[in-house]
Length: 273
Image (tube, rainbow, N blue to C red; front, side, top):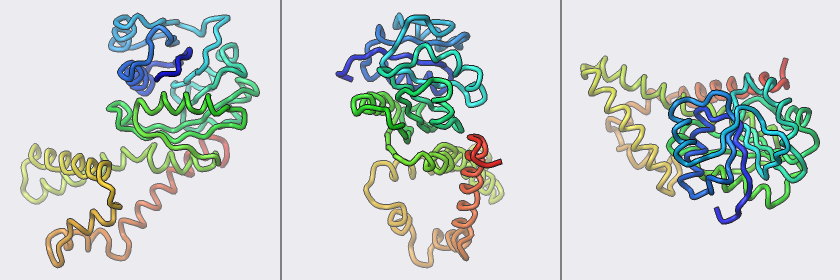
């Protein structure tokens, strides 16, 4: 990150810690980072000490970073946001990664300042995440570029202008890793049902999904083409897909699941009562 600026991380839990580690690995200057966390876990405390990163138990007075990234849990936002107004200003872009907290809710606490609402996902801990961002109308191009660079340290980044899309993003990618983990559970359980040992069934399910995910990430073909490439006419895969795809079974189930997740995201942000 050639553009040097002051960065403040609010919350160094799983997501905040993953981002901090990614920034350090990407070469961001540790002496330009301030971490605010009242009780960092042992591993994070060691990382802060190793890189001599400034650590504060509460937001420091008289400090205005160029970027403030808020990585506290959604249920803690109402308590934390009022303490952050002193850090926000027209020259500071505030970035939230909390599900269900809208741009308007952020502005209600931080003021009429540049704000970005973002939705990362848990593969960020392996630098394999994807984050979707939505800025308010006060963000400059430089501020958006800084945010893009920071979030690129934990995976890919996409931007949307319509904040309503963030609820759908949450349903697909924010919650999506859990769907894949459950698929692995189901595949392993089915393998055991067919006579495999639990250890072997677990290994087969995990590595198959990990390998298929790598193909999706690294190959240019659409998912449908990759599926067709693996499916021989009247073969074993075709027999299995006949059960999954017959009458749109899996497609309809996934659509219902993602719709339920989107609606819950809207409820959390107060859009649906």
